Length: 314
Image (cartoon, rainbow, N blue to C red):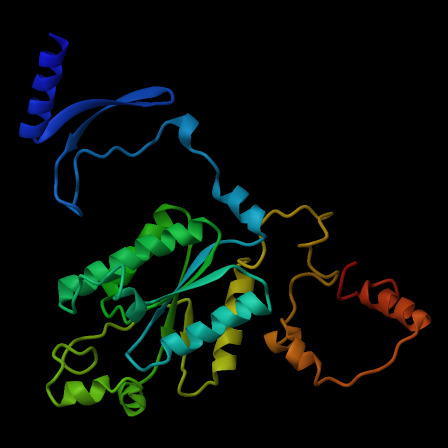
């Protein structure tokens, strides 16, 4: 009888698209239906969000404190050839090598070889491309990573949806508009795409025969045709510092030495990041200090010699 019953259940499971199941959660039990739907089917009705109190796990604050920084998504948008990837690469290098901050770059072109390999450049594909990268960026940011996402993302509504994804999860989102005139971007044409578009080999090219909707209120605006890459990076790092992203928490105890500001407070102009690099330091004038000199330097640096306020901590 047992074998007959098992055979009947297997037959039922194989011939029915739905099999009721009970999913137990801490403090609650949910009814769900598991369906044999195609991979990637949109808006599944058989998935339940785990909202039970006991399953919330770690909070963002704990994650951020564990890595000594906050997560954020820097969303670079602009024409092809505007310099999004160039400044994004340099920013990632500086944040990792000079600031020791966990940073990861999501480049629109590279993602089309993997995550978005099934998407083209029709309007609906562009929208889905932005949505996927937005969701991935939010996951990275929630884990405490600085995400550098570089996509043309021509439609304002799509970018606003990504902003909303972050806002709903209490995550920082900064739109970085690489503001370069179309003629300047076309004159650069690093990939030869404008030339192909002008000759008719590429249809629906942003800025030529497809629209680009300019950001209305970007957190950072970079005129890369008027700025050096280092100046652009410095502008972004300044914005990150002002938002407190480079430290772990907004309510750091005053006694905690790793994160407290200089004695003069936080109203100070951050020096150019290059002053933190080893290569730049080798170019500075050098002096030989004895033990007494070092003691006096410590007095001045830590604010023991009034009326100087001090500029460093032990």
